[in-house]
Figure: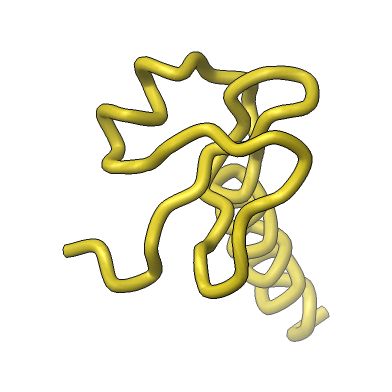
Length: 66
């Protein structure tokens, strides 16, 4: 029974982390507000994906953005 609180805490941390990784569909305006740009199908090399602009467009942003 000692492991039950540990498992509950681990489950809570996993659920909290998963909430931050959700990729809800945004708009090009939301992407630009976050300092990014929309790119069709994939982001260029060296640029990270930070969201979704539309069904086939991803919001991309430089990894060095402040």
